[in-house]
Image 1 (cartoon, rainbow, N blue to C red):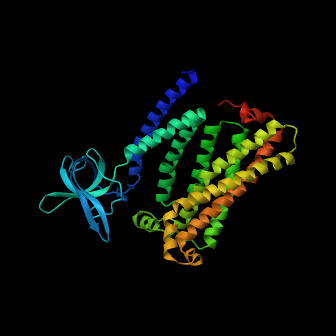
Image 2 (cartoon, helix red, strand yellow; image 1 turned 30 degrees about the vertical axis):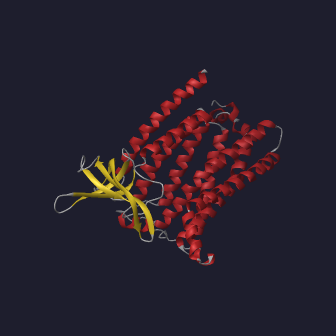
Image 3 (tube, rainbow, N blue to C red; image 1 turned 90 degrees about the vertical axis):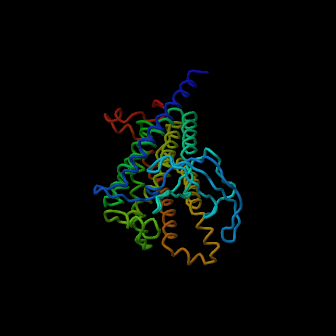
Length: 402
């Protein structure tokens, strides 16, 4: 085993442990965000009467008729593992009163979520609520961390740290500020730009490539925000297009600008793709300049834009497919309804997704020439910075320490 292999192996273990600590530190505090300064709780998700339980035995298995569909069922003996009724043994059914996906069944030792209650005679009853998925999610996350470190090295480590910072900012700044009634657009812009600045410099270092990407992201966010604001007003989006929005209005302790929330969501969503596009485009510019330092501004810009056109085509397609994949059940439902497309697109929740996709794509398209121009200026005319040049780091990323 080489020195670098041992280092990465040790580093992978350290990162996994740190990531686990971050998860177990953040999750309880995310739950605390549900409680306002008045001490009231939003009660979103599972209530206090939903607890973890472990399957001790499968008492009965068979087939039941649920409506027009026959499906398998199980009668389980479970032991409550937390809460007021911890240690209590219960018999619950799985598949008698709810739809049971084919191929999913419980075995002794499995964990599940059970909603429990107490009847007037003092007896405890419960019913199946959902699966406990913590362990497979942790395994998936650990796999992601290991492969990120092994494939990307120190950049992978820095990107994982950046991801942790992003989660922290969203949980401790963006969410509380919006819940407190602050302008979602302003909060989203400031939070997004802070995230992008920290993550880009942390991942790619202090150099001219990162400077170009950060400034390009800033102007691209402004363009995206202006476009989003115009088309949200133009299409008369109100923010009430989903049940989540209605539930949020009922639960929030302060007034929330739902139209602003739609705008803020568009900006943060676009940011997730912008960072990849701007840093890749900035890298292309500086690599082209390094390959031929004698080329002029116009020639470098044209060559870089040809690469940028490929970036835009691939990234926009990725964005569209990501939204289409998330909305696949809705698309299937629309197909089954038999309604005309020209009629369906007038529903607000459909219009909102269309606007979100197209505005995000327009922001990506605008980011390419903006970032390319800034990177070309920094690559060719950096000598005009004079005494400030050493403070800005190496001109070419290849000169920086990785």
